[in-house]
Length: 524
Image 1 (spheres, rainbow, N blue to C red):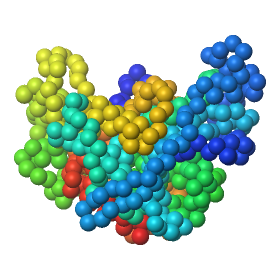
Image 2: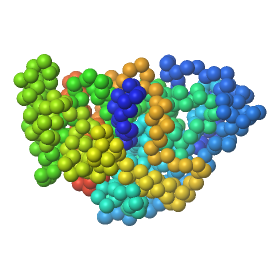
Image 3: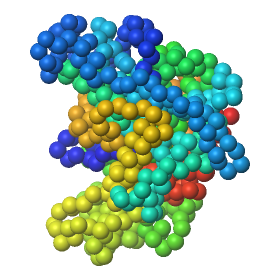
Image 4: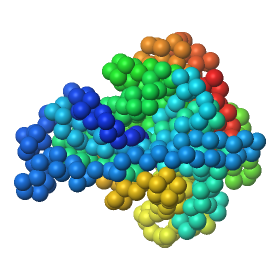
């Protein structure tokens, strides 16, 4: 899940969209191994030093007393039984947190997690998968309740409205059959929170490198506590998780001493540079998805049905686009072809010179009926609240309506089924995190780390899943990027699968079932 592009913040050039336990007996050990700090991260200020209250702390309060005030409750572990078609799963569920420290041994943040471990198996050889969403600022609820967890809620059709009951249903497509699951909520999301009172911790954690270091350390700590360092390990991320995922695996390989067997990417964005500013690639990447939406309106469509659009996008389209508007003939040819493929009014396409950005397409596709299409799933449409306005004043009918049911489901599961009751609010999608995020000196990308992790470990596999109608992280962008990988990334190691659906393509039963099968193959 991701946030929208914010035009007033240039470094947020595109929206990508989306856990562990408190180790009571390992506090001293954790304090001796702080969150690694990226080179660009400012050193802690005197206000963050031991014995000195940070900014915002009560007078006379020490960092340790402030941390105690913010402490999450002790871990809660319960035994669960899940009845599914053809089998019954007995497992332990743990809701809790892991505390992270700075290099002075002062507590910085409690990172919440929900983990599920199957009973009656040899855990030495049993895979364990760590999952997170994106944003930045998104909790792991989408992957937990939409795709991989033991329970799910309906997030499509009648279930995709704000007032829909968040009923937890047994998930027949849970990955728990073949891997244990650990869902991680980065600080500021879910119940995860800062325990440090100063600004230094926020600057560090709300950055590309600081975030990666923190999540990688949480993974290592969870493995140590649960004696799972010998288990096959996998990492799964969604949306902005495409930036996190390769970087976290690289950190685990080279800094945490943890090997990873496979990386699973769900609707990822690997490179922000191609989705903003003057980059022409953004129009090429989104064209097949826009065409898919137009064809879906007339009947079911699969990726195979878009072969002609993909060829055109990488051929005549990009060639005419590069010629620029200085070549009027090329521009007219391009504009008319784009209108024909996407269903956009030819007059509008000509006005835009065939350069349809996501916002224009969403409003123009069904403007005659006063409707707008979704960004996360453009096959979903909703009412434009201001159809007569010269400006776009609408949300996302394919995403906004999920906030209430997903939040309610997460709170209900945590407090009722798992018996873990933190104080404070649960943050499904935290805009404060997104607005504060430091992307560094330039647009974030993880293609460099993707190449490095595949080169370092010739046995590691990569699975990338996308939805055809996703305009937030279009599948064709990943297709082009993966095609650029060198020969060592053979087809048996790297696989792209694309399903009818949107950013959360797993909301559709057939896509969820098919993707589960692909994930299981990676882990065999």
